[in-house]
Length: 162
Image (cartoon, rainbow, N blue to C red; front, side):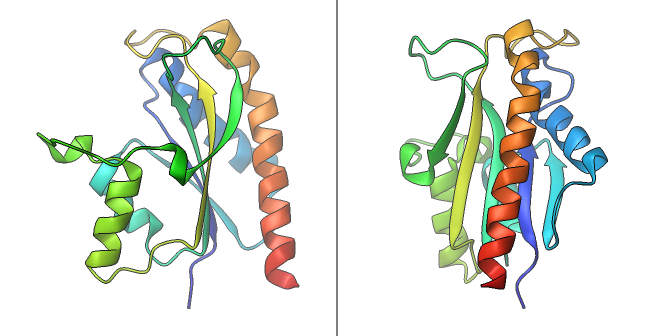
């Protein structure tokens, strides 16, 4: 039996714009607008540590901050595919394992990995300031991100029931 669909909000609540994920999770959980079977989890983890959260899921939406290095303005929201992320090379620690590499490792270990993973990412301006508030542009993107996550959940739920 598969687990409920998952909205996995990543980040670190004490690092400026990285607090986007935890804050999105809080708002989603308080909204009471998510259909069943959708679960929301906030996790301050990455790489290999994601496997236990993803195992047994059919569909997952990951909400996180990114810094693309492009001229994308802070606060810009994007839906990304797993294929948009490169595999890991020359690892020096387990924290450097990319999402595609972690999923491949999970499959090789015999774990059931999600059939579909989408990423809702916000372009961050500040991923270094400890204890600082989110930048205004990233804070302003929260409501739109939450709305998009709720729409994703409703579509996922409808597709399961069809």
